[in-house]
Picture 1 (cartoon, rainbow, N blue to C red):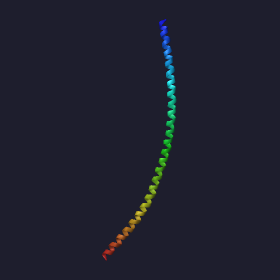
Picture 2 (picture 1 turned 180 degrees about the vertical axis):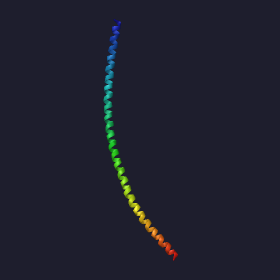
Picture 3 (picture 1 turned 180 degrees about the horizontal axis):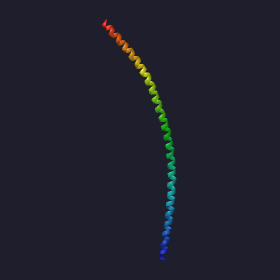
Picture 4 (picture 1 turned 60 degrees about the vertical axis):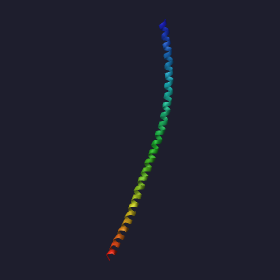
Length: 95
């Protein structure tokens, strides 16, 4: 009879423990899904911002290429004028 009472106590405590663990797992699962939803939104924001940054970098690269061509043209023009002046000034010295 005494073992039957011990078994009843064991099953009662085990039942309470199972209910408590189940409730705890439900709470943890709820917050985990909530956190995953927030992480998903953050990932989407990061992806969108990365696309915008890539577009900005591409635009900057194109601007630099365009400006480099313009600057090279200006430098060649200035260098060409400077070399002509040097040639005329050296011929004038010989006279």
